[in-house]
Image (tube, rainbow, N blue to C red):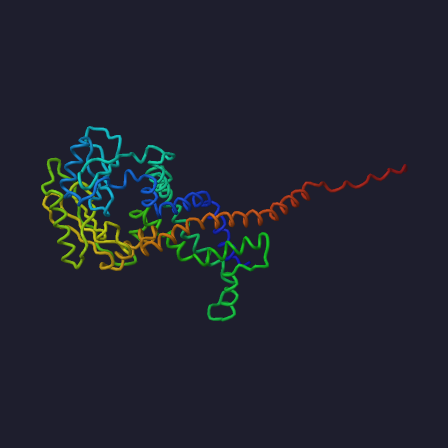
Length: 408
């Protein structure tokens, strides 16, 4: 084996061993994450299905009735235009000087009455919280900010490991201009039916990795973008491709108060999107300091497939539009950044994409287990050789026989 190939093999082997436990956990939980909303709604229909029919109340009225019922909570994120028959979904933060036991609230859209509440951090075994727990565990191991950084590093190493794995499937002394080398590489894509034992395991590991390589690499890279956006991904993309500058934000003045209501924010954001050719309606908003960030959904309240819908950022005090993001219409680097979450979640291709991502999550443990079996099988001869060398070194050379001393 040539030296560069031996180095690649060691990198691939030890990276795989280091990532094995993380990928065994991230794969199946990623399958759940691809359908977490549907699974959560199936387990908790009393939270997600509205009890009464009728058009939803205006967003400012919904926010007002929420404040009346939860006075110690401060609205952070609100899905106020849900699909027909579903509840309004609100995420709350504790108001200054108050405690908050339930951070998720579900409202009847026609009446604004609270239909149910929960705290996603309550545990992992209850019906109410199992899906939010698994979703959060997928990207942070349930360890908060530290876990997000750890999984970001895992995704970064996995991205590099995908590259070394691809190079190792190429024939030795690969010459792409020769047809024979392409035929030799074609063997790597097949699972030979007559092979048994560890040879079959090796074929499974190599062929699955090759056929799914572009998806595996994309999921790994998008994992870096979602967990290490400012530390790694955005700086790298900005260094290689043109990227729009983020909207300027400053600290919230201590005496500032929001001067526009949420109905006005909905109207301004809708007008800004229509001015750029978008015909959908706003469906959710996020409030933070001086900003109101408005997101657009499909007409039935579902998220827009592909790169997603527009995102309009407003100044909370004046209602001025500070940024309009139209996916796919910005600079090339912007499109690369916008692509990451839809690719990772499968939303890029809608339902087929989510099915594919869920299937990949179940294939990842297969790749991990087959990789461990290959490593264990190749480790046995090395251990046997080491024991033989140690045994030979431990045997003392026979002492020469003493010759009798003849009398002189």
